[in-house]
Amino acid sequence: MNDQELREDLAAAYRLIALFGMSDLIYTHLSVRLPGDGNRFLVNPYGWLFEEITASALVEVDADGQPAQPLSFPVNPAGFVIHSAIHRARHDAACVMHTHTLAGMAVAAQTQGILPLNQISMEFTDHIAFHAYEGIAADDNLGERERLVRDLGAHPAMILENHGLLTVGATVAEAFYRMYYLEQACRIQIAAQSTGVPLSLPGAATLERTHAQFANEPDKGRLVWTALRRKLDREQPDYRN
Ligand SMILES: [Zn+2]
Image (cartoon, rainbow, N blue to C red; front, side):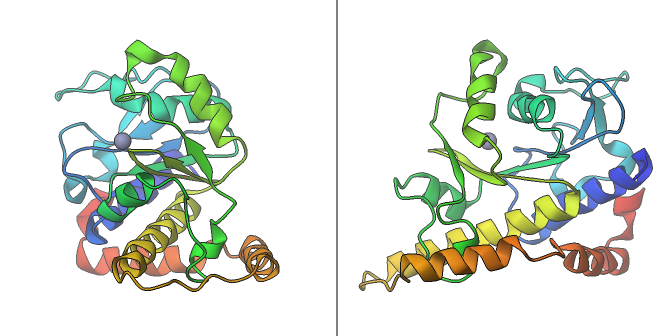
């Protein structure tokens, strides 16, 4: 993909995160690595609602989160600590998504991670990383970058304890697909727990078989992404601007 295609994909992801109720005012970030050397990546202009973001408004930053071009609005490099750490270390993870949703934050407050309460959840149970809370991720704690990368390892998703959710993907489509279903798993968990009744959990063999089925699924969200891009093209085509 060229830079413009990556910009349109990432702008679409911002619109969809807003559309599906996964944004947190102007906070959290979705980022995509640009081709070439230097660990440059695209991220949202700080202060914009996700529903306002367009392809041309996305900011190109270097590995330290410094903008590559003069900007007419403020930037918040400290806000990119998580993203810059992962883009430096995980070149297979071209796209990084981070959310603060109610269900995600509620599960991030639990010690047990993603319970295998539904087949959706079983993609993540026992196959998700955890990162302990160290305070708001910022430039005054650069050591956290190494711990974030160590904790993520080769996982496709991570629970930031007492904070929120994180997914990565080889493409924007893949990271979004993971984030959508990780969010669904968290919503299912909180809904099921809220009933207060005993919960049904599958055995270990079934859990492992189901996880393997997800892992071997070749599409990785591509069909869904194409359909979602068509939806945006119909309903809010200015994301491409
Ligand atoms: Zn956050």
